[in-house]
Length: 332
Image (cartoon, rainbow, N blue to C red; front, top):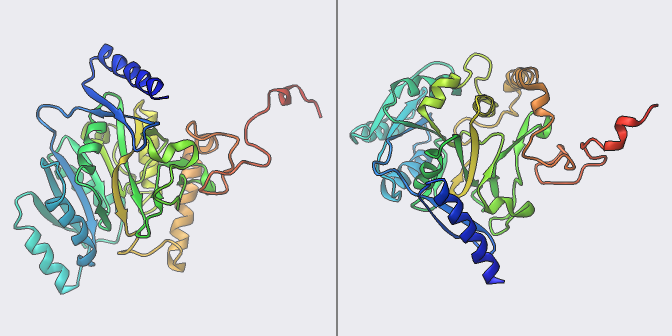
């Protein structure tokens, strides 16, 4: 019923007008959903994109070329953090990049600590918005950064995440659910790109408890307020989840948008945490998250308690995690 859909969009427009929020309300990816396209500020804010990297210039080039040649948002700077590269072709490429006045290269030869690398770069960032970017992401459309900035400048928003795909066009990141697998996991992982997912959530803007720092924007003032990433206890894993939980605890929202799409060639530079020499560090980071956030990991407010935490694709729990009203009266 098209008239019902238009009535819904009219109600959303009237709400935005009452709130004095400049935005356009249009159909989503299909005519049955709605999309709010927020207006950018008259002077779009400078976005400081922080990109830790090590070697693999051919992978980094996918992101850099996509940013410089195929991204419509122009008010950005990039801080490339070179963590111990030793491949001649990569070092030559970094020198070439430094000739672009928008790009600076920061050398850090210390042990890999993702949190420290980003914190260090953030201190020298000039932008009102920080962007944490992996070196192995590749933009798909021209408006991915514009869409993320639109969301990031809205009142009460503390962080914005993007929709990331594996190279085979299945979903890699559709928002993070805390508690999945013991700490956190990605929602609707490996969902085919053309699918809308559980109750259509993979195709609409959502609030989540966390989003991945593979592609994340946050206002610099919010980053400073919560103290950035934890470089002392969460050097590699879960630092982005911890950051988002700190942001939510401070009273801000975490937004995920499907209208910012990129490929994620996951962990190309560093490898996976399943390597034997990395398992001890990973186990310590798991303990840090479980001890620090405890009950928050057990009850994600953006995930139905009737769903299990055992899989990254929604499945009904057996038994459900929801407390049944009559159980409080049961006496064993």
